[in-house]
Length: 170
Image (tube, rainbow, N blue to C red; front, side):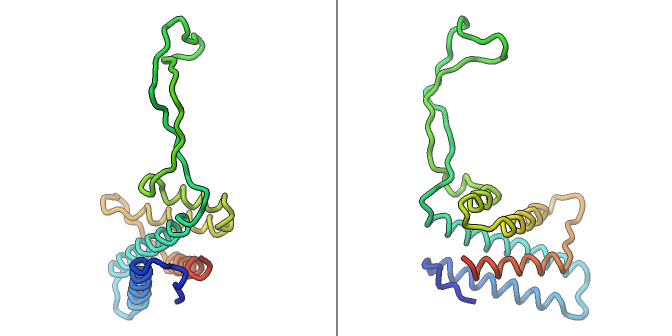
């Protein structure tokens, strides 16, 4: 696996270690004598790690882009007197200063990042759709969830193929 495009040594090492780990547990999960619970939990870990690795790579790529994801905030709000209120719409009428600023990484969801990178032509449409599917799989992995989120071997293999694709084409 060639990760030379990642200049951040800590990120590159963590990525290498994580990829090695998920491939090792994937291979072990195919072993004879592994029960359903073991496979289910292993697949859950693989999904979590796979999406985490992809997320780290996509944010690394995002950092290199000139265009950024922004947010709009309204500052210094002032309410207008009732004589200026539009009767057709309920609510208060305000005047405010619009401020557009770059979102921090913690304010950007992975889904939003994928959609942004697709719009920026960094990701192909098909790749973005595949990414959104495994993000949804990751979002279904909750310990409090009443129903068990079981993933098939085909879904796991597809997610590993997508991870490999992202790492090769980043």
